[in-house]
Image 1 (cartoon, helix red, strand yellow):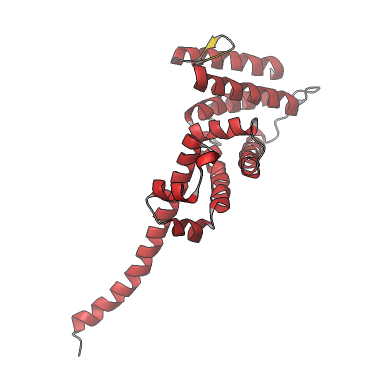
Image 2 (cartoon, rainbow, N blue to C red; image 1 turned 180 degrees about the vertical axis):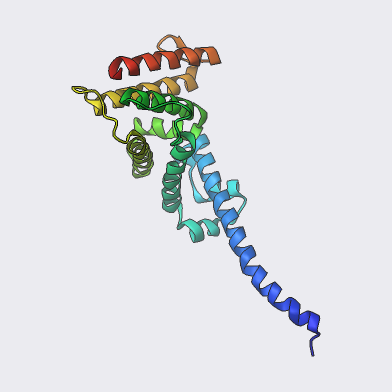
Length: 219
């Protein structure tokens, strides 16, 4: 007959095991996602495979199929994660800046996007793929990023509208395209069209020019 102590211990052991499995699964899922993003940022889709991701995550490749359903599921998860990227890098708070006009809004968004893109190698990869590759995987990541940015603008602008007579969609497309080209050029050669983009002072100069462009259009 088991002792009273053994009987008391038994429920603790049976309830702790599922909790451990749940915790381990969450940790493993995150490790897989982080490894996949890291691999994409460093190697691109050319070397993006189950075996490479599993090595980077330090797990059995069968877990990738179990948790994500394979590479397509991983791409979907990365796309979903881009929404968190926008939330983390481009926060909803105004950072002490009063958004009284549409120009205020676009100045803040443009500067935050500039800093966020500079700091994130995977996002730079995605931007580069958008203009150089036309694959289903790239389209899904691109659409996820665009949707997240669009949602940010909608949340933040409230009742703010662009000045009358200005095609804000066209203007904003050119502003963000310029930011993207600036950052991608700097990553390759520390300059863009003769503008040095290597030091903090260089980037401050670029940010000042960006402010003037936004204000020149929106006031």
